[in-house]
Amino acid sequence: MGEAHTRDAGQARPKAWVVVGIGGLLLAAGVAAWALTRVPDDGPVRRLTIAEPWRHWEDEGFVEMVPPVRLPTATPGADDVAIWLRIPEGGVIETRRREGDAAGGAAGEATGEEAGEAASAWILAFPPGTIADRVESRGRGGTRGVIDVRGTELAEAGEEWMHTLRRDGGAKGGLFGYEWPRSSTAAHAEATRLLLAELAEIPPGSSMSEEARAGYLSRIQTKNQCVTCHVHGRADNRREGERGVVNRGTDGSGFFTPQTVLLDEIPLERYGTIDPNLRDPWVTLRCPEGEAKLESKKGRLLATCPDNAVPVGRFDLDKALSHGDERAERICAARRYLYAHLDERGREVFSPAISACEKD
Image 1 (cartoon, rainbow, N blue to C red):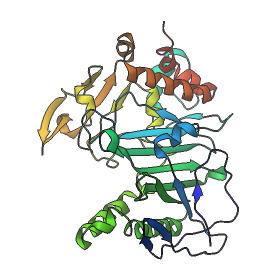
Image 2 (image 1 turned 180 degrees about the horizontal axis):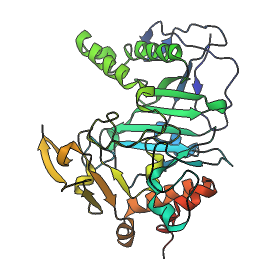
Image 3 (image 1 turned 45 degrees about the vertical axis):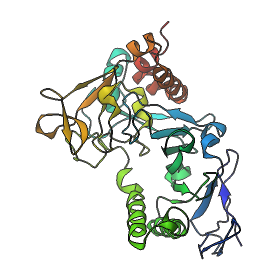
Image 4 (image 1 turned 60 degrees about the vertical axis):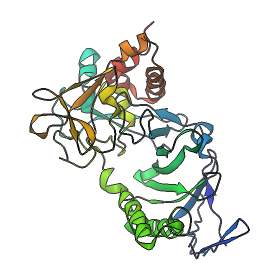
């Protein structure tokens, strides 16, 4: 018999692995029991649990990456998605020029004001031991809770361990899921299979009709195609859908959000129900050419540009800070955390980002 592993800060990855096969969920008098199947110790898939997701990331030393231009949401007045990052003590973020970017001179050149102006031409690569989690919540008031977690732990020699967690169906809102090595398509397929098998046996999947449950699991399976989106060093979309659904590019580790914390100007996203930037008093919109317009499409308010170009939002951090904006303070806290781990080149390139947060 094997057991699930929790996500603890000091927990070392064991050399022996246990894959948990789901035989079924036995419910009697409120007690749940899983049928577990042990596989060879060198199996690459591992089951994870988080008992208290409402406090997990702060308790485990993660820092929220608050992007100046906000991510799409489905809940009016609330951010459904939070990005949490933990860099190991002493870890250094490498700063390098994005491949194929001609702006700002040759690779390795970045000094003073020029570096600040060319910040978008540089990308970050995070050190081994870094964990980034995309944490999605739903609901309001006392019913609001984490429903989905997707993330990556960077390992040595370029390996990455990807993970997905969902609600465990219990009254306390705990999470369960699986992690697998990015390099193994077979491990990814097995982790997805195990996740879907378990989700089919617990609420809300277990209470759905067969047709509804099939659709529910299919959506989760589609969303679990992590490698497709999280390519390394992908440039921003200049036109909608040019390189994928997400308009923002990725950094050298395949992350979308952490680097945008250090930028004031970021592409807007087309996906999602609500774009909160369209009503943000500190965000102005622009297009590469022409004027940005607000249009209602299928009940959604969107910013659009001529020729299907991607609109860009610019966050006025100085003005937001001068008005005591709480979110602006959180942006600065995230910037300070990243800046403390940047290499020398990164501190030059992104010096304007931290300077804005250090003004009296």
